Figure (cartoon, rainbow over the protein chains, first blue to last red):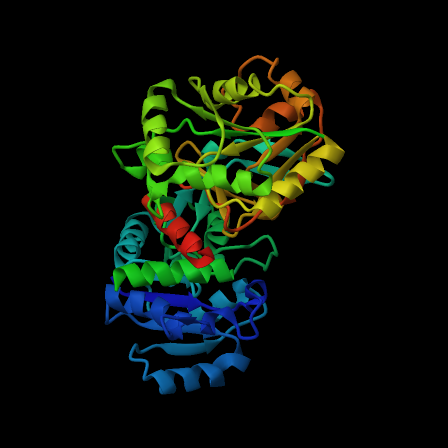
Length: 223
Length: 223
C-alpha cells in the first residue's frame, strides 16, 4: 500500500522566546526540521514527504536547504492559518489512496520503529495514533477554581497520526472547528474508532528552550 | 511563620527497570534524593526536612549518607503502603502549626524560587500547588475506545504542594480513598480552593531512564 508523510510546521516559535521560528532552530548544528524529515526518510527512503511551511518562510527554508546541502527529497507546500488548514494543504498534494502520516515538524526525535507501528496499525484499523501515559496528577481549571481529574484514563497524544487517505480526505470535508487540535479529533467525528499505539518517551514536542536542550541530549546519545 | 518540608520517596522504581529504587539512582554521582533534599536546604537551611522512605530502605539510605558524607540535616521516617500513608507519617513528625511543603522525592530539579512561590501562596490562601500546561493533545480512554479531551483547561500538577499545617492535618482525618493521588486532592475535599502557581518546565518527575538523562543534563548545565 502506498504511503506518504505530511510534516506540519506552522508554528511561530513564540514559546521559544526566539526571533526565528522554532522549526529553524539549530539542533546539532542543523535546522530542527532536517532531523524530522530525516527520521521519515530513514523509515522509507522512497516514501514521498510533504513539508507544510508558512509561505513567508519558504525562501528561508530553501536557503537553509541549499546552505546545508540537505539531502532528503521533499515537496514544499504553503501552510494555512491554522493546523487544520495546513494539514489540508499537505493532504491536497498526496496523490494516492494508500496511507498517510501527519507529523508535528517539531517532533524531531521520532523513531523509524514508531512510524512503522503507526502505519501498520492504520493499515488494519484505518486510523492510529501514538499515545503515552501522563506521569503527573492532572487538574482541570474552571474559572477561579480547579479540581482533580483521574489521570489513569488520560493519555498524551503524539504524532505521527496515521490514516487511510480516503478517511482523512472525508474528515477534512467536515466544517472547520476551532476545537480541532489534531487529525484524530477530526477523523473520530466520522464515527471511526482511533487505534491507540504505544508512543515513545523520546518523541517530545520541542516547544521550549528546555525541550531543545533535551533534544540535543537525545541526539548526542544516539550519535 | 514556621515551615517544614516532607520529602516523600516511596517508589519501588519499577518503571526505571533498575534493580535499585529510583530514589537511590545516581545523579551526578550522588543518590537522586540528595539533590532533592539539597534544593530545600538551599531555600532555607534552617527549615526542618522530613524524609519518608520505606522502612526496609533505611539502612541503605543511612549507609549512602555516611559513604557520601551527606551534609543536609533531615529526619528519617518510615513510609506506609501508599502515598497517603507515607505523607501522613511525615506529617506526624511536623511539630508546629505553620506551613508544610509535601514534595516528590523524585523531583530533584525543583528550584528554591519555586519553593518560595508555593510557600508564599499557601501562607495567603491556605493551599497552593505548582502546575504547568500540558503541551500535547489529550485523550481519555474508555474501554476499547477513546475520545479527545479539551486540553486548554488541563494542567499537569507538580510539587511542592504547600499547605497550612492545620489544614493538611484536618484533610488527613478524612478516610483513605484510592482516588487520592496527591495532597491537594485530599485538601480540596474540605471545600478549600487550591491556589495554582506557575510550575517549572525543569521540575520533572524522574520515573524513566530518559528522565534520568534529562536530569543529568539540567544539573550539568547548572554546574
